[in-house]
Image (cartoon, rainbow over all chains, first blue to last red; front, side, top):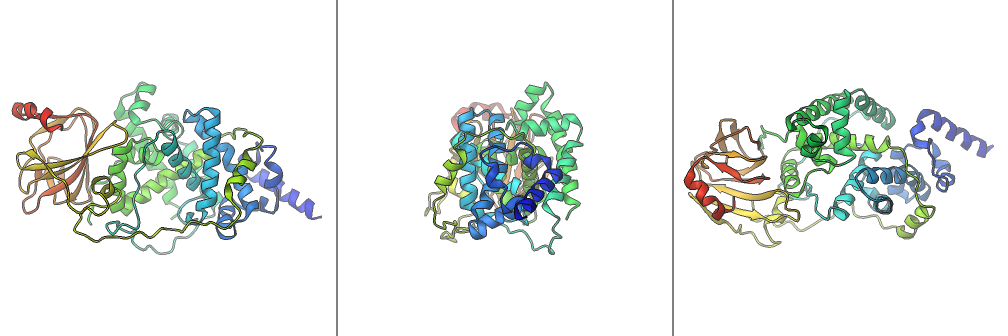
Length: 217
Length: 220
């Protein structure tokens, strides 16, 4: 009976978001189908932070590691390096889970920033300077009235929808920027358009996406 | 801090995607430290990265990948402190992080200004990658920087004092983005030297022949 209800929860998950379970990685799948199958990625990440929940971690691994590998392949890594960065990212997720703030970002966004930074550190061998909230000159964010939190899934869906309904040429500049980590000069060269055109497409795309995200607040 | 001039969308998205080289990132990050608005915008741009990661076709991992990662987790609880406290010396330094650590050694509160001529000073800031150059500039109160154009992109972040040019007034926290299309003569406003972080990927094009002759010596 218990096993059956778990199965149902997995099936309903599949119906809700085929992207999550659509291409399971065989050796990981059995672990991800545990009691965390019905939890969101955010919930799993919070569980890792609070209780070092290894089943929750397995669910995060099953979802993110294969995608980070794909992401690093797009950024020009060979297969071995891409996998190594995927593994390093998940180890960092485990170690730094306490820094994840579900009110500020989705699990996917947080994991993206970790993978991005690891790529810069290990492949480009350079630093990515970031603001330091402990610095006395850091200007804190003014207190806002408590945000109405929108469910992560819905929020992420809205964002993906906003991206997919952008005009193709705007999607292209975002894709080249985020997947291939190209500078805007390189994007202009690749697309054969002036730099100003790349910048204005980026501005239009970002403006539209911000409007969608902003509508949630 | 009353910031009027922010980081443009195009640069900001590049910072979020990881596509900016170190010098540009340093300027964007230092502005973001002073500007909650741009930190919000960066978070929104990073959410695009999250959405892209989520929509990628998963790539099969090696069979031992998960076991390899588990082996690196360790058994004990090893949650890193949410934010490591670090000693903060409230000296008379004026540079926010991450810029400060690039310019000053830990306990060194004296900025190593070098004379540029015409009453101006600078401090070149070494970068691990050499694709763009960064420097602190100190323009004496009430004085101009000689008229110049740009061979590429120049970003200027004001840290103290202010300057004006045809584009407006730029005070602490403000960023001016100048490219090939802009020829300007920034003037520091009277009363206080204007200290700013300037990043550029091509030498400035000074209109004055004398300044051009001096330019190689100044390395600007």
